[in-house]
Length: 553
Image 1 (cartoon, rainbow, N blue to C red):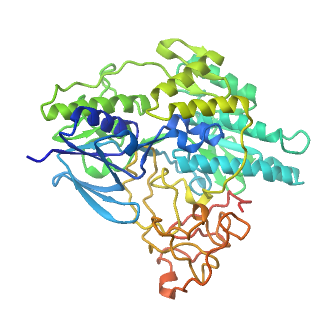
Image 2: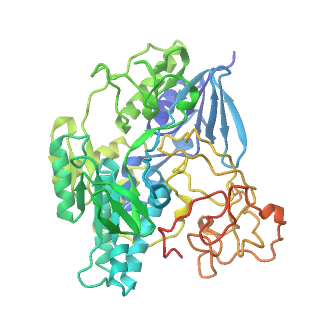
């Protein structure tokens, strides 16, 4: 008799925990398949520390194949789910299409960036939901400080040293808090104009910072931010974003080259494509995390509207804490559906919240006890070490080194602005020139957050950038998915005159290989709805124009 097959869509907090628990309980009696666009689980709460240069990127990633024995990883993004046929249709990283049949399905696709109809935001802002975005912000902030120090124009210096963060929730508050410390440390080593200091602004239409938390924690965070020099403006947001700055709702125009969008999340659109009952975009499930009328389908995490049994009539909020716990219950109920154990309803007890404000400062209320200062900082870091499913020693070592050594404020240039647009379906995957695939309005399958807008349009797998792209192109590097640039080209950087700089001969990796065959004009022609590559057009399927990274080289 064949083993039952369990397919888990997404490897965020809910999907990873489901796979982890099933791997331990099934013990080879079921085939467990995890569908995810990356081969790692991303520990999102520490992402601001990556952007601030405290942690190296790999510290916040946990290998799926290395920590999930008896789980088969399939790299790809779910495009469509056939509930009647019990099939998941997906697209792999190199554009190949595949189908997975299942006996049990777990939808843990997570959430995506919440976009608002504000002019210019999609073109000029960057999100903060994936590792590429954190790496880009780290490089971008470093570059702006360096360019500000080199200019003799005081207005341009002030513009480059102004950083605007929209959204005063967990992510936005931590980004602003860590960012101010990061840039202050850089300025201490840079000959900026007399009296010039980096300015971080935190905006939100809410009445206070961290409005979802206890008011005492909110006051603690607000005090730390203001003492550090962050310009906190509540009841204010962005009315319009332009290449030169942002127009605020109070009428003030702020000159800036940096706009970070942290306004919150909404459920992944993949849930909407199923045609099942929804609650504000989230898939309605019963307390056992099963979809009514579809006993073989389970949902958990941000994509599921789980009844809150502690507050009848409401649903559990979209937090990592709930997603992690729901993943465990989901796995136990799947095992029970095969006769192993008994079903249980999801109930939770609030353990408190922690907000890392950088340095030794934090705001925390473990088990309802409100803490601030160094005590809160110790509890916060202890909680993260306990919650991480891997890399604990490496993270602790980076924290220790950061406490005794200065941070390395260098820009690697591996992630360009056009490769991490706000309107991406997969912030966990940086866009590369010529990446194959089709627009996928259903959103990402990752448990990390992402945004609707679909995958890049179909392109030739050898559509890689090279020198003088209008006349010739380099052949793709061996074993590089999506027809990425030739060997030794770092980060898939664009050719001359493409936004985000060029792989010139002074850049690491050298010039593209010479004597590459010239492709026919039919191969070079862009899709009908895409303009020819040029100074304001990113290569490959990326259609947006990004002028926010003036100075990229």
